[in-house]
Amino acid sequence: MNALDTPAPAPAAGELAGRTAVVTGAAQGIGRETALLLARAGAARLILLDRDADRLQAVTKETGDLGAETVPLAVDLRERDAVRGALRTALRAAGPLHILVNNAGVADENGPDDEETWLRVLDINLHGTFAVTAACLEHLTDHGRIVNVSSILGKAGKMRNTAYCASKHGLIGYTKGLALDLASRGITVNAVLPGWIDTPMLRREIAASAEEIGADPARMLRQARKSIPLRRLVEAREAAELIGFLVSDRAAAVTAQSLTVDGGYTRGM
Image (cartoon, rainbow, N blue to C red; front, top):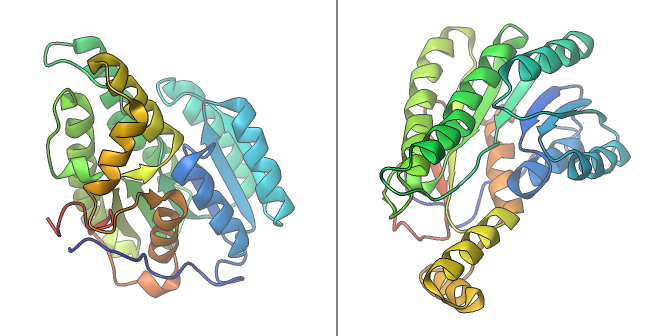
């Protein structure tokens, strides 16, 4: 699949009317933009997960103001029992689930022998996605939608990122296998692979990298922009719009796919 310079149009107002969605990592960045997009498209109920309780409450208010009944779950995906318990309660009250967006993740750098970071990153990015999905499956309706947010590093490598790369490569494999498992129910499962997305996570990563090598973060950010053919970072909203297309009825025949949104950075890899 070639990189998408312009994401597909977001769902129109009312297109997702009456539907229930779960979004993880919903407090900021792509997760927040996805929650807002779903609310604008008419989703009736949103169950939003994030470990940042304060920011999650702010997003809950925003989606509530847009008309969506929103349940915030301030949980850490590493705490499996807490995640399963919170989801079980929220989903029983919400009724049938139509959409699941697995967006939560961390991008901590690690050395090749840094087992602590390796285990933490895989536990959140890969095992956490599995745990949330497993908890949601019994509530997911036939012809439902699952979107997993991977990364362009799910297809490539990067220095000091063995854990992140492994987790995102694994997420693409998980997406392909799960899509086949659920195809008989008409449920689609796809992955979105963002590139340089202008999010708080990216800016933290750049700041950490700059500090480690004694560089200027602003200069590193400018260099990143220059490496992208469109000469700009992709906005979180643009990644959310691609997710919005994949969870809409217009994408009913799209499954087991990995779609890139990176401004051409990977040159269609």
